[in-house]
Structures are given as structure tokens and as C-alpha cells.
View (cartoon, helix red, strand yellow):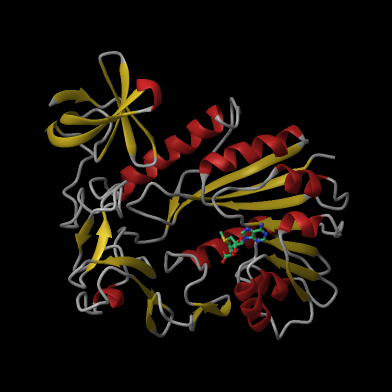
Length: 381
Ligand SMILES: C[S@@+](CC[C@H](N)C(=O)[O-])C[C@H]1O[C@@H](n2cnc3c(N)ncnc32)[C@H](O)[C@@H]1O
């Protein structure tokens, strides 16, 4: 066992300490703490060490008692030991660091991380995926391991999902519990995927229950508000909704751009694209396209505004170059769920002459190291 002084938060739920001139990554701690730890493994070539927390000797004043009895054992959460205010602060530091280090932006202003009003970090997830044990109990995996921890409730899940029984599942399988606006579904790996519906003050969507939908119950509304604020859709706009899923953004945009406008929703997944057709059927000013965005952009579409919401891997360079070559395009809203790939992509846009107007992080995955960020870019003419 060794004693470590925790120096700073790194990313991915890990903090950094030093031991015998080597960097040590450790989870479950906070900057400034002194802890007992055990080295569990070495990074490539022994350049860094990974340690497990054994006990906290001197706690940070920011440490709180984890609300969940499985904290530290279950790999689902990173920050049960930090208040929402602390999580907000640490996320802000990580985004700033990634924009400096990966994006090579020396001076860049980031808006304070916003959380959903009244956020407690509990009861927000509309979807939970469990593994099942040999005895048919629902379980989560330990961090970075296949070892299962039986779980009888997940405190970050919507309470409706915790009312479902936690045992007698098919042993050694996977189950997903999904809460829609009105119903709750249990998906096993043997089923045909049913649809589930969601609604908020912007509209109503059907979603194939196993497919992508924002995981925080309030995220769809919060994200639409942010996207509409920065995109400012107007009558006659020609807008691309790229990586559009089931049409979360295309629907409220269609309401704003009138009969002369057009929103083109581009999505690779066949099932999501069919659901988008269903969700957008009442609008004449929408077209849906089932395609890889990179291939679609080769058709030289005419847009004056674009919203981008790619998966965690971000954009590839050909997408950024194609967008930059659309002469009429002068506004982009980039919705990102990975601040590392976002920093990389913002550097590419900046090098092509795009101005970063606002970077707005949103705490949409509380208790975890994930963060959503909405960025408004405009073309410097
Ligand atoms: C982060 S989700 C966003 C979906 C939607 N904007 C929403 O918020 O509900 C990313 C979406 O991009 C789709 N996707 C992934 N790679 C793609 C590609 N190369 N071209 C088009 N769509 C892609 C995924 O199927 C997924 O629906």
C-alpha cells in the first residue's frame, strides 16, 4: 500500500498523483486529498501507474457521502462522492484543459457549465442496461472489468425503472430498461425492438426503443433550447440536421422556417431514419436522407445553417472540409458528447477560418465523467 497526494483531476473520472517520479491515475478521489492506494497495473512501457483507492486519509472539503450504496464498487458512476457544484467545476476545468492541450487554443472563453434546474444527479436516466448474473439478478460491471456487481436499484435511473423486478432474468444475458414519456419497456436480447414515445413542449417523437435517444430525461428539451438559440432558424432558411437520429432537432426547426425553408435530416441508421420519417410526416419543409454524412456532403447540398450531432468519435476531416466548401454556409451549431474530439474538430474549423462564438457545456450525464457541449460557430467572411 502507498500514500498518494491527489494533484488534479485528469479526465474520464480519474485524478492524477505522483509516485516515485511516475504519474499515477486513480479513481474515486478529489484534488487535494491524501489517500491510501494500491498500484494495480502499469501503463505501456511503465510510463504511468494505475492505482485503486483503499481509504481516504485527508478528505477534500468538496467530498460528500455517496448517495448510492454501490458507489466505488459498481462501474456505472464516476462521481458519486462529489456534489453537483463540484462536478460542474471539474467538468469546466477538463473542457478548458482539452481545448488548450488538444485544440491548441491559448485563450478561449467557455461559458459556465449549465445543469438542469433542480438537478440532484439522481433519478435522471431514462435508460439502464444491466447484465444478469448466473442466478438471474440484474447487475452492473465493475469499472474496467467483467466482474458483475448485483444491483437491486440504480439511483441515477428514473424511479419508474427501479420499480421493475431485479431478479429472475434469463441468467448471463443483458436487459435494457427504457422509460418513455408514458410507458416503461423491458428489452431483452431476444426481442424485436418495439417503439417508445417521448414528448416535450417542442413536440413528440417515436423512437425504436433500443436506438439512440438522449439519456437524461430532460436533455431533449434542454438541447433543443440551446440549438434553437444559437441556430436562430428563420423563414426561408436551408438547414442541414446532420447525424439527425429520429429527428430531435429537425422537428422544432421545421416549425420555425416556414414553407419557404427546408430542413434536411441526414442519418445513417435505417431504423432511426424510418422513425424520423414518421416523426416528421406532417411537415412539407423537411426531407430525410438515409446516408453516411460524409457521402451525403459530396452531393454538394446548399445550406446556410447546419446542426451537427455526431457520435463520440466526432467528425472526420472530409466532413469538415466538405462543410467548409459550402459557400452559402455561415452558421454551424456543433452538439458534442466528447470534449476531446470536440477540441480536435474545433481546431480544424478554426484553421479554416471559422470563428468560435459560444462554447456552452451542459451537465447532461451527472455523476459520470461525460459532458455534453453545444458550440456556435460562424464563418468569418
Ligand atoms: C449523438 S446521436 C444524435 C442523434 C440526434 N441528433 C438526437 O439527439 O437524438 C448520433 C447519431 O448519428 C448517427 N450516425 C453515426 N455515424 C453516422 C454517419 N457516419 N452518418 C450519419 N449518421 C451517423 C447515429 O446513428 C446516431 O443516430
